[in-house]
Image (tube, rainbow, N blue to C red; front, side):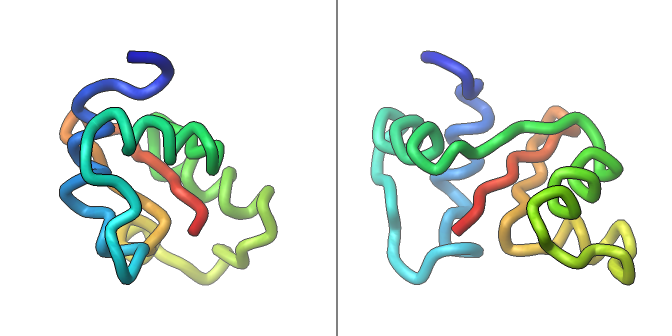
Length: 87
């Protein structure tokens, strides 16, 4: 596997419906290819999530930490990191 951990890929596979109406991946390999294609990123903290979204033109100034964590583009990972996928 490349840039994304197995934990990250499994989380995306299980929760992809929070961002997409239909599944975009059915296997770990498909999930990895999809995340690479859309240049998804893994960040360490919610502050990093805020910074990334802000830098990419999403207005996050009025969003609290709970709202950030619940954003459809943000996938909290079991290890405490966050996967950000732009749909």
